[in-house]
Image (cartoon, helix red, strand yellow):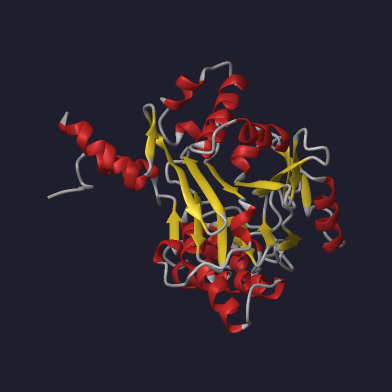
Amino acid sequence: MMLEMCRRPLEKCFGGGDGGDGLLWHMDLKPHSSGDYSIAVVQANSALEDQGQVFSSPFATYVGVYDGHGGPEASRFITNRLFRFLHKFATEQGGLSEDVIRQAFDATEEFLELVKRSWMVRPQIASVGSCCLVGAIADGLLYVANLGDSRAVLGRRSSDRQAVVAERLSTDHNVAVEEVRKEVKDLHPDDAHIVVFTRGVWRIKGIIQVSRSIGDVYLKKPEFNRDPLFHHFGMPVSLKKPVMTAEPSIVVRKLQPQDMFLIFATDGLWEHLNDETAVKIVSKNPRAGIAKRLVRAAIGEAARKRELRYDNVRRIKRGVRRHFHDDITVIVIFLDHSQLSSNASLKDQSLFSCTNVPVDIFSMNEEAADGSLHTFP
């Protein structure tokens, strides 16, 4: 009884578990300035490399999902920097714009400076990076900016209002896409091996699938490959110029009455669910817990591909679980158009909120299990 009394306040504050899956965290539903949102994340790697966050104020709602690779450092760095830069530049320049977003992404690429300061003792940090997907809603406009292959998908009513259709709002910067392979090859006409097919997929220099990111210094700064220190960590890669960029693709859209919700998710979700399936799940189910429902659907599909059940997968330990599915982060933003045009009072502090996913779900749940997180003395 006492354990149950402790568990329920913890779930209310930090999000709940999922029927025994100690690697899944979720927040069922929380208000933002123009609707509600739901978040869920499941950890598959030994250290959680995904991060996600939502910030809401009377002026705007910001959404971010960051899919790290090579380690968690870049995605955590973005979590602590990007929204601050968005707010700073938007304030200085009188509101959100494409230029503001580009400046914020460029400033967040200062992760390179962190790498320069620490790589002599941790050379592997030069190969740490993160995809970065951001959405911003302000003044009836939606901005979507991304690096890498996380994805934003809009669910909107069809013209005859008989169905909810999916509309992709972001570009997958992944060389699995023919257009992206062509783009990379066109930027490096003198390198016949800029994109190669290896280990069953297309990769830049045989290493990485995404062509844009924050970090990945060793593929942006040739000096990090020439230095012998890096060769102790990985195989040398001959670079004459950067093979990756931090220049985001940006879409600006005026929100319409038929626009119902937005799904922001790392590629761990889209590996197992297509856009249409994800939109159908959201449109056919209650709002509360919808992000968790999407994560569970993706895990269920990953299990089916291996001829397993969902219950089998959720009992697999972190690290080993990465062989079955990736870290998955999902944020669903519902759009209530009656609120999009309302002028909220700046004095109402309830309209200012920020939610970040846990830095590491396994560690958080370990602390909760051993009593390190207390809700009373």
